[in-house]
Amino acid sequence: MRFGETAEEDLAFSVSPLLEAVHSWHVLTDPGHHALHVPWVRRCRQLPATLRR
Image (cartoon, rainbow, N blue to C red; front, top):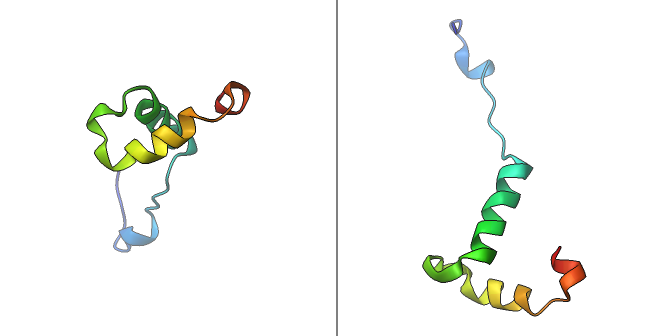
């Protein structure tokens, strides 16, 4: 891959919605080492099963 003199114009970064979903699922299924997210996970676990799916 080669970039011209203005390489910053050739690059773009974005957040992947799929990656965000996978990370959220990981926090829901194994919240033990995600101390900042534990209250959020506890609230989500109280939601109806159909909504969590």
